[in-house]
Image: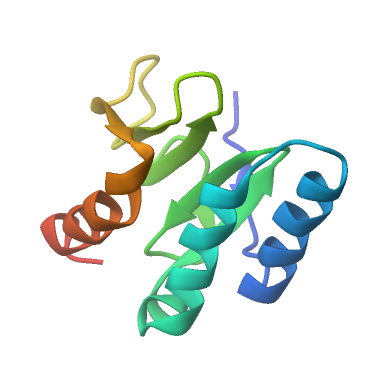
Length: 118
């Protein structure tokens, strides 16, 4: 079975997605802050992403496959935590799964990007 290939969306469009979700009461201010952080840094030139509803899928490559070298970021509104799942290869389970409090999300994202070399 073939893998799903993604063509990245412009970061402004991704920002608009989270703005729209917030207008419908999704309360994704932390995801919006992360996207704005990416846009305000050099990361927006080096990283590529798409959204799948409220899931942000980030890669250092374009085009990219959803389950191959991708970071999937979600925000758990109930627990006020970022959920990071890094998929290195086409495995059923992520290479790693991390949960970070809302206030550490951007810092941990930046650390991940440095660690992975994107």
